[in-house]
Image (cartoon, rainbow, N blue to C red; front, top):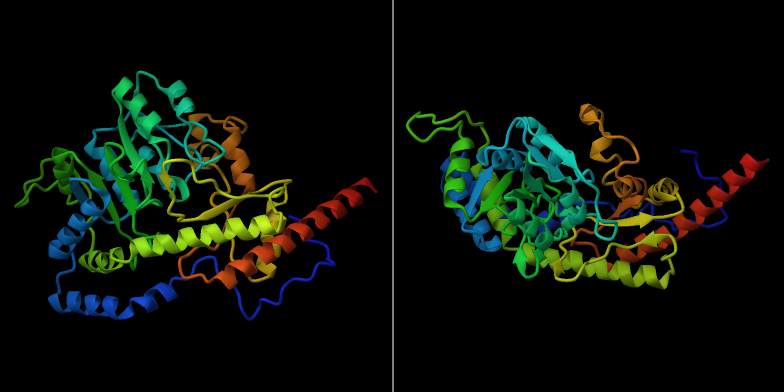
Length: 403
């Protein structure tokens, strides 16, 4: 990427007041006493793996998502693997999913020996396109694995109709979407199983890794509980080969405290998204910056606030924002079908044009709940200046090439 030319547009003097993309410290400070007391209690008990804290947290998540069962595990990645294994999905089976997601979405399918079948996404919501799913179903298809990307649910009505018609299971990758809703129902109960991540930067983030699986199927829940402890049914009686994927009691206890605050933090993220809408409209950025859409009947929880930058300006805009000490990032710069480790599946560039274009256009801005309005104003002001500088740079580059 060429560096921007010196611009006549002044940057705001933000070096002393940077706006980070993510800052976990204010959240911790707001609940410090609760967290510290909880951590101390767990250390005094010396019960660190599974146990009462994990069982209690599983019950809380089941209640929060309105599922009958919840099974804690070591990470969101493991949640997907456990779900696939418990559903007997393995070698030769096809699982339809999106190429525009975090790597674990597809790697988990590969890990159990199944075949990830990629289909394109819808440009207005970044989520998997049900029409593309329908066209990709074959006799070998066993499951659909939609991702509720950035905190907004996929079109689960259309997806579940396809699943019923073709006798498929639906595994929700809800790693970024705890508390999101589709037609009044929470992510995690919209398919056969739901898989969550508690990575620290998630809306409900722990002090390390952690995951959860939700389901209404009692037998499936029982099997996943067994699989997470090496397939042990009790007293070292191993009914099958499982894995070591237990949720730490310390993580469960911390997450239980944080769960009490989750809805208020979600409201903070939604408020910030509203400020972005207002301020970006005031700056008349709509010709270059496309804000995320919240589709009807959805509750968007904004794990990320991702905008699209048109005119091929995304990288220059990123660079200019970083010069202004404004946090920004790309989620995700290369779609999964073009990752080298999946080359053996034979996908080619140009096969999923929406996903590929999103990877070139998408950019995340700060959205965490503790942001104040002046910080959002600083981001939008910096964004406006960055767009202008990027346009100047593009014009300069074009003139230089022509000369």
